[in-house]
Image 1: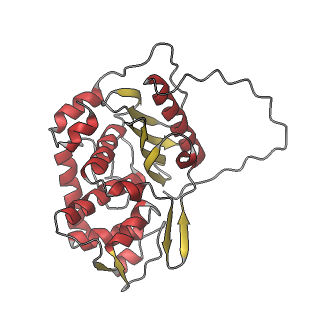
Image 2: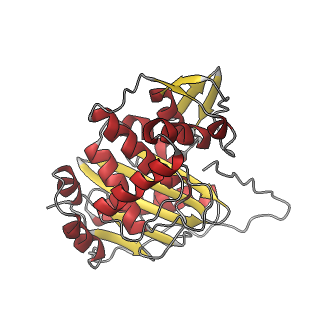
Image 3: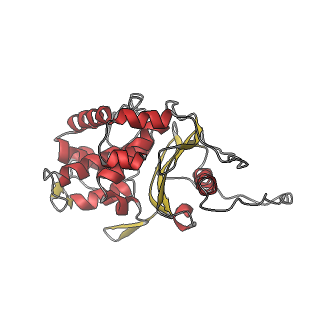
Length: 303
């Protein structure tokens, strides 16, 4: 049974853990990609590990923390405990959370649905805090819920300390746990998929655009969450579909935003070749040396 099927039916997560700890199944003659990130996990539709690199190593999740914030929000909405169109009063504390932000102001009222879009697309820390306070009463109570849900999901290496992912030495996870989390989020709460697949978000006339090349490549990416802090590096959680098959990919600790996306592109191509959905690529020709004086522009993530 696949990882996706298991999570949809809410089967015990012990079975899922067995799949994730299993040895990778690699195609004959397919060379695994050379990757930059510190920790990587790639799963196919049947839960097989197609590629793993330090998948159980402890790592700061950064804004991938927001996947659990979204999970609890959609869980409450579907259970009737929250209304996505309900107004949310922004507290002074939420309005002063450090970047990256929507620019919420203390005392302003914002629909819960808009805040969730800000969390998923703009990766707004102030929005995540406002959601947590609205649903939990305060941050502490909501974080308690986050950790209880992580325990329920079998995320043994995960500990949450806040709803947004800003640095905290108590907050940790690994690629294995984050693969389970994004799978559960998209399977249990399909309404999260279009939000995590959104590329633009408008708030007060300002357009937040996610210029992420993976959305434009022929990789079938339908849901994606980025994360960045100085301690974590550049993180990615991705769900991609091709020919009716789902692939889950976690990338942690890439050295730059551009390198995290390049790792993602290489991993998805490897997945498609390994599973027979795409022909193997010919070896890349050797590129001529770059002339001296050519500048390389580097782009950095918002998290």
